[in-house]
Amino acid sequence: MKTEAALAFGGNLGDPVAAFATALRSLRAHPAVTLGPLSSVYRTAPWGKTDQPEFLNMAALIETTLAPEDLLAFCLELERAGGRERGERWGPRTLDIDILAYGTEAIDRPGLQLPHPRIAERAFVLAPLAEIAPDRVIGGRSVAELLAVVIDDTIRRDETETGRLAELLA
Image (cartoon, rainbow, N blue to C red):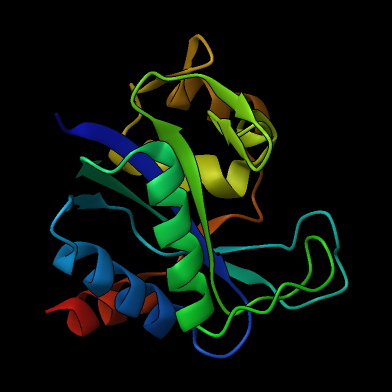
């Protein structure tokens, strides 16, 4: 049985859009994953640790037969392949992939919490997700409702990078 999952992509080192494209191609090629709608690419201010370059962020919906733990393992593998080195928390990175939601499941285990525990605080995650799934309910509220509480003007759609992502995926 397939489950819809929402993924967030981010990066601010190297070429994040190329890293997104490589990861998305790998997701598309995985036999247990069907790639669904993709958001635009957004430019966002750093969060948590603010003395670093701005981020590029996007979201994707997938359908998968992978268990949540297996999907997480695959996303971590994609991050490593994209050059991700885990250093300081909220620090700069080439590629970050977070599972925002997995169906309607609530999971709270070491290393895996779904829906993502800080999603309601993060406009940089909610803005791209709201573009492709505004009515999706997470934690009892729609993505659009969650975004309305935290939206700010530092999050802006980047048409050039969105177009480049489409070209890289073509």
